[in-house]
Image (tube, rainbow, N blue to C red):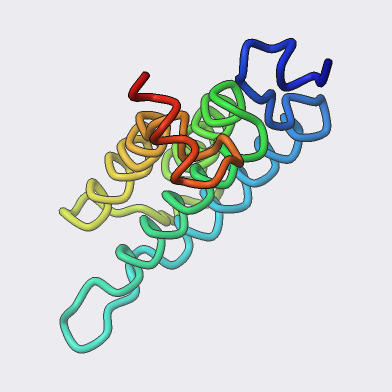
Length: 139
């Protein structure tokens, strides 16, 4: 009997310590990069904020696929701690996240994008072809 069958048809997608550590590292890197680029604008459009939030959402989906729900939670915690630290701990008084709408968009959008990825259906990460996954959910 395969491990997949023993698990009741559910696959354990990479809940290894390495996958969890990778999720934390990814959260730190994405939050640091997003904090640095979120204020960039391209002709009046908040291109940096959009780029940072899309990158954060993709990182959260990657963590969900590689390390499961625990990986998304760890990525989210690491990202929030990193972005908040970079926003509020400033040696010399320099500020990376200003008291403006774009700063609030980053500080609130980062955890919201992680929550959105955490709420995606488990079947998206099952590794089964879509036809088999949908047939299995009907009956």
